[in-house]
Length: 430
Length: 147
Image (tube, rainbow over the protein chains, first blue to last red):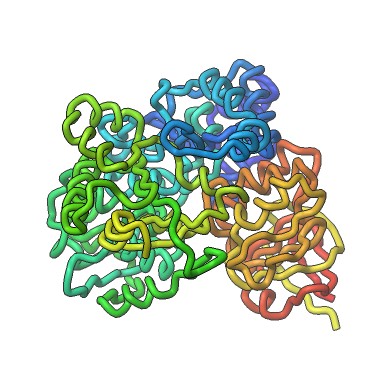
């Protein structure tokens, strides 16, 4: 095979089959992928990977055939990797018998087999199932400048923007191939040029913007381009503390799902913006001004996908992407205050918080009093992916509310702001 | 009268098939999901947000689009659709192909016995001109003739 990418002797040997036919197909796929985007060479992956495919959904059997071929060829990731959350947790997210039957036998009928494949390919550990793998408790936290082979869009945008690592917006399977080869084609967000902003976002709101709506507005406007956000530190400060990182996690996930943003810079806050400032902005960058009216306009544009738009909400999901440790505390306090305000002791509808298994474990053990308080309020804490839970014909019919713009985008769930959702969940209706 | 457009062959191939057109971004997961889950023999687009394609059959056709959008499972879904034989015969992009679609058509090319002929950079004029039901001839060099 003639290649436009410049390959090392080792890479040429792999392509010629010296490490087996399957490994040759792995590198061929990555070469074709890189050449499509003008990559000149491979870059070495310097930190553990993160997989987007966590669900043993039967229809993906062709994908599981590839993973089995990799295993049969004796291949595995160079470093232990994390993976997106599991789709089901019957203990904390109740399902009726019909749903269970369909989930176990049809929809997610290959979950156990797929998890075995993941372990054979180098899964980090039993707690490795989260979309927020970069959190301290989980431990798959890259350093600034690390080259990654990740796919989950919310994790990619966080790693690029908040940490300053380098990763393209890869598809599922491609990220696994990069982990196995230990190299990824060097293009776009792996290059200095590709990390420059094509948009200037001027935040001119009168109060701290709702992270999920701000991210949505930015994503819808800039799509896959890199934005440089000005004016946001007036509201969230210049310290990358837990609260600020949580805000950026949620804002970034919305930019990535409502658009296709893989990297954003926040003036005076994110590492590359602190280091390089406005040198990161392309000369011909376009400007998008976001004020209170623009955020209202964006929020009002979200369609309600429920069959009965006046229907009663049945279930509330908070934590897509998974909540941070700090957010578990913030949400517990927020619900406690709202229950007091409405003179109630328990929430009025099924309310589920989602967080990484390691974060849940730490919350349960180090902050047992707060955890007990949360449970006493009638709130469940789980580590599933609410998106995967909902992304099927059965659960898609339920009237679900969420404060996640990602969940809203990919499912029939209905979006409400943090304050609104807290009020509705406690009240038990809109 | 036939009109000719020139793009870049991402997955080179030749075919003459009927066009289906999406003027907005094609949400891969949302579009294939319902037919794939129901193990249908054809893909009837299930993305309710895509007014152009919702309810239409795209299997075996030339899918004309600006780019794909949505979940990073997108490439994997295109590959799966090809392995299940419910894929479009061609994907013709008016814009430069996005990383998720590129991954999908390349995975299909390398890891299945079938292929999705793919051309990108065809320009906005292509997307403005082409309409559902028109016949499209794709040539190896990325030439696309709309009849």
